[in-house]
Length: 276
Image (cartoon, rainbow, N blue to C red; front, side):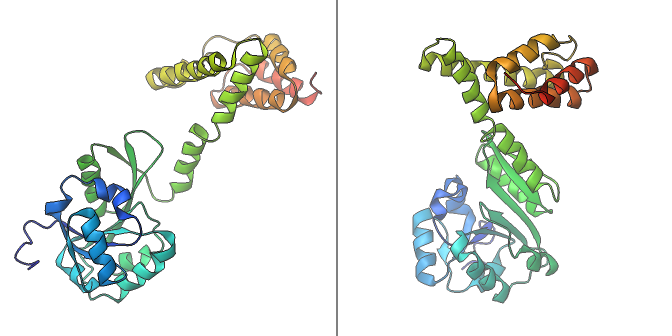
């Protein structure tokens, strides 16, 4: 059956967990493109195929040998079980592409050594973007699936996952408290809570838009030297932990952009003395 429909089938799937809630469930052409569906059991495979309204439940992972591209999706609890099933399957791995979809890549080395190309495609916090890493031609398949989802895949190099995650953290969880600090200072000045939140958000939005347009040259002090005494006075006014945070953020910018060494010296000296 699969050989007769090979010209239509583009990929197979081995999966566990809530597959339909992953990006696989949103692929617009999956009904015509998805072939064998493998689960931890035939009954589970049938449930997955029914939930996706695509593919044919497979009785064995061996049936994935009929396709060139194999999608892998699993919750953490069943990841190792599916990896073991793939390892035991009679699959001719050279020339095959294995794409991990919103899943960890634990165990992927085995399939790379067996001759497959391996990559991972997953959602991320950047709107309209997905993250893609791995080797060709699996990476090309990941870009194609991202386009089908009307998103763009950000391809990152080997060993860059932690750095990429750090960038996301700086732009999300680590940034939110800073916005709250700004809102709290505005409230301290008598501005009502809702308006303080909107003003703080507008400040950060303006800064990010300017950075997207001009990069580091959008920095307020890229060309014009800031008033060091005024900055120290601001730090002293906020006091406490926020004083140190503010001072270190200013220092970070001065060092990163290699600007205004005299201002940097005064901020550093201010941080060494107790704040008011």
